[in-house]
Amino acid sequence: MSQELITTQEDFAELCAHLRDSGLVAFDTEFVSEYTYRPQLCLMQFATAERLVAVDPFEIEDISDWWRLMSDDQTTVIVHGGREEVRFCINLTGKRPQKLYDVQIAQGLISKSFPLGHAALLNRVLGVEVSGKETRTDWRRRPLTDKQVHYAIEDVRHLLDVWKTQSTELQSRSRIAWAEAEFERMIDEIDSERTRENWRRLSGVNSLRPRELSVVRALYEWRSGEAETRDRPARKILRDDLLVDIAKRQPRTVNDLLATRDMNRGPYHKEIAPGILESIARGRNLPKSDWPKQIRREKERDEQILGKLLSIALANRCAEQEVALQLVGTTADLKELVRWHVYNNGTGQTPRIAGGWRAEVCGDLLTNLLDGKITMRVGDLESDHPILFSENG
Image (cartoon, rainbow, N blue to C red; front, side):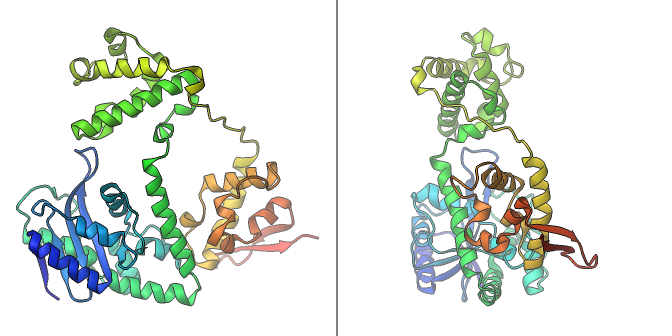
């Protein structure tokens, strides 16, 4: 199979026509995220049954034909760890991929391995050995060498074969629906980034009082706008920890602002101090009714201990059913289950771990353990799932 680098609009249009006709395409990107507000797309790689192609987006003015294909309901797009590819699609078009298949997630639904890197996954699924990736390449530099293009295309060369093998395995285990649900959940999570209150994810923000929350929200919104205008990563405009610290102190003058450690370095005094002070004032002067509400964290009670108990049972169940623990449930998921089942008597929104395909994995195992209906003990120490469960009574 030949490989090529496309650098003209005409050739790109012809490629998109081919991808549309194929209906099944492996896709990957090379990008750099350290220097710009959003990751900078530097190379796109495609594979169909007939062609292996790299596309240079620096040379092609309009690549929107591809994003329309990725977000239509006719083209199945195969990716590996494709969160950034999904993010590109949503940010550039406002539309979600409709038929996306992520081989990294799929592998975690038919084995205990997640997340597997590209080389490890190819070896596990196909027995294929691939050479190392150009991990230190600055993909912004031009011209690209033949070696760089070759390494980049290797990322998609085998993905269609992986997809075929995994699809057969998922079908034989009746887990196609699991995979489709998990792909959709990943896309939902990325899509929600545009509308969720991202400032609430700042470390330390839950310790702030309502008026301080109003200030940190205003600072966060100012920083996002400033970063987009300057096309720089937001944290290089103002670090997260400084946002929270400034929201607590709420300085009113430049001198007060620069009294904060690390605020007397870089461009703060001349360039961004006025914007910071204006944001502080805007957040502080909002009517009390417009202040964000504090999210009260319930006392953990026995959630941590019970969560650890459940994690042992869940790990054993996942090993038994050959599905990756990391995909089924996290420590936070297990604590949420404890709160819901033990302290809220199963009222309110069903925890993620107790719904959908995860409920098929867990069944009543975890809730029965919490209710004391079953006990667990060590069985065969040679087994990869050595815990045995028995009913009480």
